[in-house]
Image (cartoon, rainbow, N blue to C red; front, side):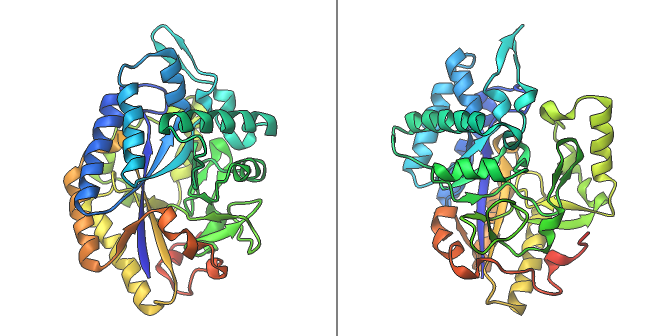
Length: 349
């Protein structure tokens, strides 16, 4: 059984540039309209730290529109997830631009006390925005997908009721940040974990539902649509050593192509689903939640999004949120290995 979970990282550029109206509010509004047309919902991963800082310093007049939009999405049945780029927490303004704190780039490498401060503060702001003092998000996505080392951050987040992570993308590798999700290639479509998001643990309190990926020849990542994006990589992409490391990340026979509904062409999206449908016919007893990722700042091709939702409807594939499927994910069979010969195993490193 296949179900699709669309997730959107609701944020401006990683270096602090960009206008909220252009990069967040307008694209999210259009996406909401398309999903409501199909009676579907997505998971809105709200990057709380940046909005709290922008709100406090009053640098963008559209922050009020963004806050109202978050509430509207919540009240309209869209799931609100927690997304954190902790480098925003100590951000300051200088000469008309944001200076972010590179020492706090990875939440997972911070001391436990600091993680608690960031999570507690971010949740407090989100609750005020939603006017829901008891709100706790079910799902989490780490900034730049950095959910390693997992143990301390996962422990803190779970204390606030968060149960699902969707930071992992199988085959992922970032030398600059010591991120390595290649071990997750051996896992199934989702799995429980405790101390390490890569390693299934049947007794773990967390559930990892990774961003769906396919291992493809690196040249397949150079489509005209994908190459049209600005290449803004945020704080982590500066300096010669970082550039060399990033180039080495790509120097592989196969590279993880994320199920990215903003950067993939319609043909790529439908072909990816068709391959999973073929696997599903071989082993229909396996539950296959496929997480798609997008970013409001990347949302340009709304026609393809609409056409892709129509395609999923013709295939009988349900579009849902993590909240919709949590009861299925929490069942004991969550720790399922990738079936032998599965497409998910193709090109495994």
